Image (cartoon, rainbow, N blue to C red; front, side, top):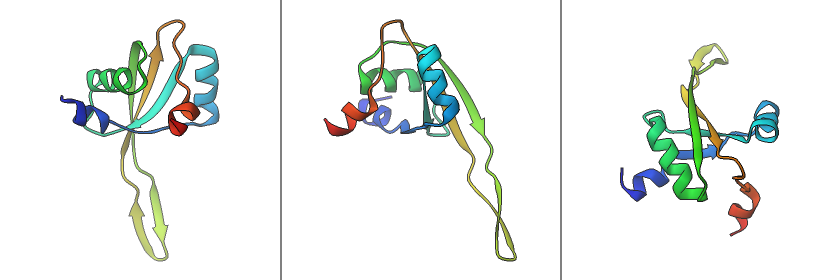
Length: 100
């Protein structure tokens, strides 16, 4: 993948109570990623965008949920989530990246 394609792999950080604990305890960050992204693509994208060393990547395919819109049943889109473990001493500061 070229640089522009790698920049589009990560869609957004996924911050929940569970992922906040993973950040504090295991130096593990969570991102929403494109559904066609591979572990290698995700690793390269994180290293490119945040200038850190990635130790491991785990990927979870999240199924969409069934929703109702009045009498019509619908479904949200499936999406992919990536847990990225960083090497010791590495960290990502989301707030500094947003301001800079």
